[in-house]
Length: 227
Image 1: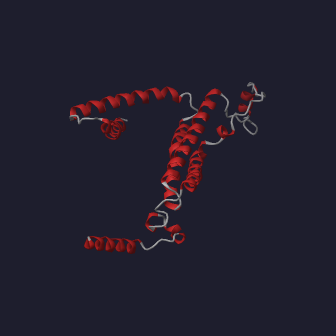
Image 2: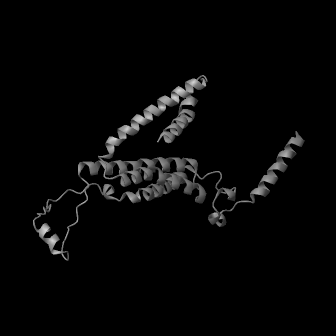
Image 3: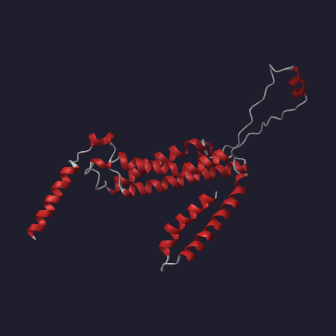
């Protein structure tokens, strides 16, 4: 825990706080900022403990939170490796829409579980085939079967949390390709085969990258000699 908090405070300071400082500060000042960051992050972690009891389970909550970012990241990498027509705008828009969609599904499902809209009915228990001792004990028990008809929640909230990564992945791919089609293909779409996975090299009509670099160097040297 301490190692994670210290490393997180260092990353936050280097990537988020230090670039915003107008003047460089001393090591003592940087140490104080990182210590304060550790205290804030620790307080947030302690506060999140009280939210765990409202969740359905730690495994589902952890998988749901990881699926929010895992799907869009996988989709963005796949766009860059396998789709030459994809551009940066398509990857950005597709990733953001996918991130917000999966986050909405995940947090909406947790809210529905907390409110009782999404529930997991208990399966009936039978003691048939067990010993007489268990039958005599179970005979004194009364099972209350819930017969009330519940209103079904939104269909996306009834989806298994194991599908969140795939939903984010497919949404990123589809939205990314659609936006790339409207905004135009990437300038790297048919230039260098080394930028893409070997699976799609046969679909690319690009020149030999080494030959292209050699020709570019020759043209550059010729321009310098002319000048």
